[in-house]
Length: 105
Image (cartoon, rainbow, N blue to C red; front, side, top):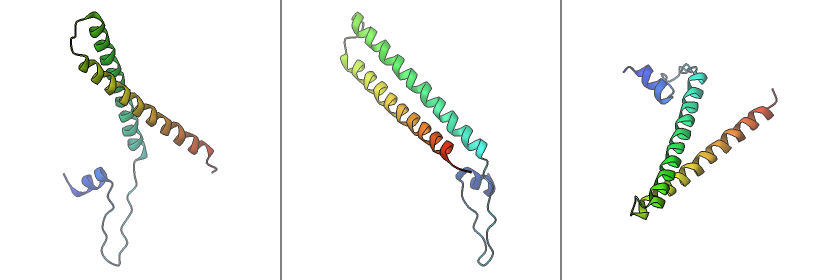
């Protein structure tokens, strides 16, 4: 991996020679947005899976297939925390969108 790839990966700024200004790099905003969007999609998918697992554990416990209520409580807590986090991220997305829409150009 070369230095420019590392600079792009970690969004570092190149160090210039003293007295000579460094040339700023142009960021690829579409790639950054796609990365954030993919992370949001993955988070929603994971939250859905945790909700489904909690529902499955609840059914198992109600039918008497599971003797351990701890598994049910753990699955429900994981699902609840994931849902709270997802809602918080969604709220920030909406707030960011509203801020951008209210900007005057």
